[in-house]
Amino acid sequence: MRLPTLKPLGISAPFRTVPLFRTLGPGSVSSLLKIALDVAYVLLMLITGILLLAFVAAIFVPLTGPLEGQTYVEGTGDAAREVPITRTLILFGLGATSAYFGGFLLILRNLRQIFRTLTQGDPFRPENVRRLRQIGLTLTVVTVGVAVAQGLIPSIPDPGFSEMLTPIFSVLVVFVLAEVFKEGARLRHEAELTI
Amino acid sequence: MAIRVQLDRILLERRMSLTELADRVGVTLANLSILKTGKARAVRFTTLDALCRELDCQPGDLLVWEPGPQDPGVEG
View 1 (spheres, each protein chain N blue to C red):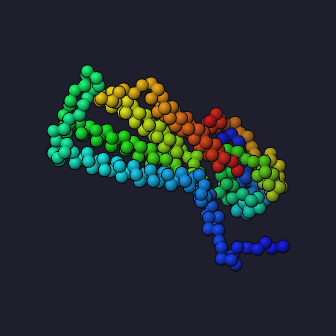
View 2 (cartoon, each protein chain N blue to C red):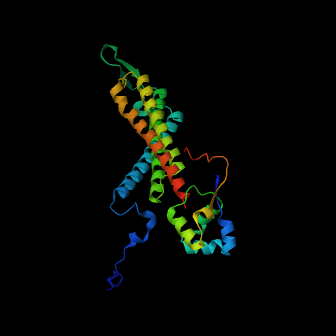
View 3 (cartoon, each protein chain N blue to C red):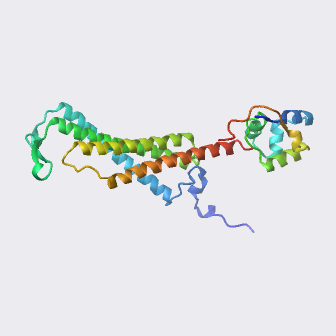
């Protein structure tokens, strides 16, 4: 008995004919993840771009307008004192924030590339091991950078050990994942050479 | 590697081309070429079975061991 096909009704299944995107079915977790990655990437690009523009502007444009002559309170309790907002301070703030968001931009760029290999059906590649290691390194640099910046500015309390625990763990997780991917790439290579 | 695949010799004896064997065994020409040139790391029993059936030979006719340096990839 022949089963009725969908063709006469004019209904086709466009997603089933594209085997390349099999991990990206409509409404799947992967497709939601892809949307989240894309949105976050565009947002971070905008934020980093605006911050960099502001940084360049702060180098050339003299400090005038509402910020001129303003002060902020540094320290707490008896040690509190008023410090004028200088150009150096603004440059440091903008530069540090740009670097912070730039680090996340780099991580997101690598994540998107890893995700693209996943949609192509072959995520266990040596490039992905390199990308994961780069993510781990970037996380380390950002974590250390934030800790150093917090140490430099007296008005922000130094991060305690418990606050550093989460970043340290995430760095470890990423590096372990990179090693897992390295083993995966080796197995994949071996399977390719098994006839 | 110290294991050599004597596909060349047997194909010559049977007067069969690599393409024809690939068609009969159901292995792609590229994979059969990897096997012939000795780049393969492993052979599935199903592949060996099909090769022996189509070439009418024993696994021992296909595979030969020669003393040589050990493959560095064995330990991973």
